[in-house]
Image (cartoon, rainbow, N blue to C red; front, side, top):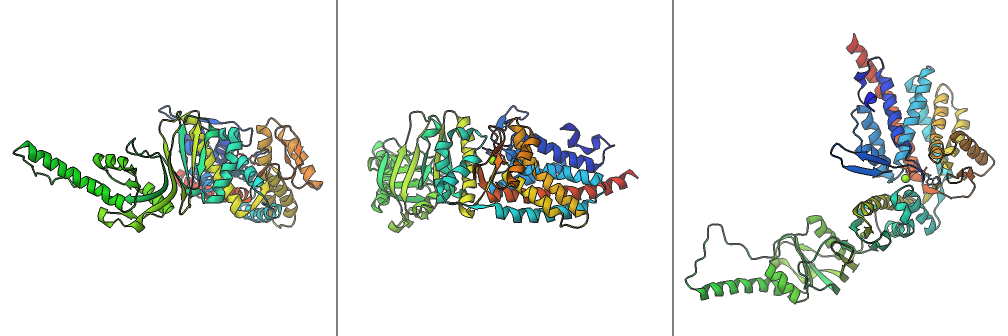
Length: 511
Ligand code: ADP
Ligand code: MG
């Protein structure tokens, strides 16, 4: 990468060439990870920290790029990730190919403005055709399939029988941002748990507190549950031991009064954002109350939202109506885990969804959790937009074939750009074939033939070679494909445009 990270290293090349090379080189980096048989990348930083990943966005995020053009392409991956949760590798490969195709046209004397215009015409037409190729989701099995395809090539794929249905339940329950994923090393991935209530990585203060509570009444405080400390500089002197004992007893009594007050209001689960006095915690344990101290603000708000509790700022403010409800509060533990978790089910406002991912090691559990997070997003997208398309190169070859015909109706040199766009789309099946040990060109030709003879949904059979004639053998949400087309076209156009500006400045500088 050294020769493309700094344009000034080679003064003979123009900035234009360097820009194109950056786009192509970045596509090359992620290319080998595409598809079910794609390989992983091991990213190592200067301190030896390693990340092993198959995800295009992660690879580009972790790579140390210095060339400004690289940030445009990293932006493509970011847009793709935030808008459609998947398809980052495809989006980057497509950007690189669109740039490469443009380069060919520039060499033939086509101006970048015409290429950009032609690319935009092609994009619009490709999206129109994509709408026609899309199929409406008709059952949960298809959603499970979407989740499984999203986990393709990642460690999580090995556990898709457990994780696929989990993704569907989560996606049907809430938005991806409301899904809370906890990780525990120890136990196998198949032992992972999920609930529409809340699971919190939080331990009760005292071992004597109940492990299970039916009918939890939850009080939330964002203040200390302790006695106010003496003002600085105040000394308390005792003249005899009895007075000291009396004073200590009085303070203890005051703390117990706080506890009794909370219990009298009906609470049996107490969260404090700050401290809870150990004497009070002991009192709670003896009276069947579960207490948690030092709960951070976001957790406190999550508990408030899910259980319908009000967060109160002083003890005296607590009223019965402020208490939240959970039909079942339980501590879930496993001998293989280092610490238990708290589970709140049957809550009054199940807005979220919690998943506990377990795995043999911290690394596996975290990697699975990351993949699951993406897969839930993709499944949610499919569930909400209700539209899926055939994967495995099918959609891309269909769009390419359509664009090649459509190009004839486009006048001017833009026609060449529309054809170039069509050729660029075929980089997806070509890469899928290559990564699966198949010959790219014969694979694409076979796929084109199958589609031309009427099997529109035909896709690449990457495991056995040849063409798979089953409909919806591999599915992905339509939006994963459309966002990739849009962001790749935008980035390629930007690279073509920026290139002109850089050329002008360099010419001035060299005079
Ligand atoms: P991305 O970051 O672009 O999602 P992936 O490595 O997840 O990259 O690969 C996605 C591509 O692999 C899509 O084009 C999808 O259609 C294809 N794909 C996934 N599973 C299969 C399969 N079993 N057979 C053929 N193609 C597949
Ligand atoms: Mg993917």
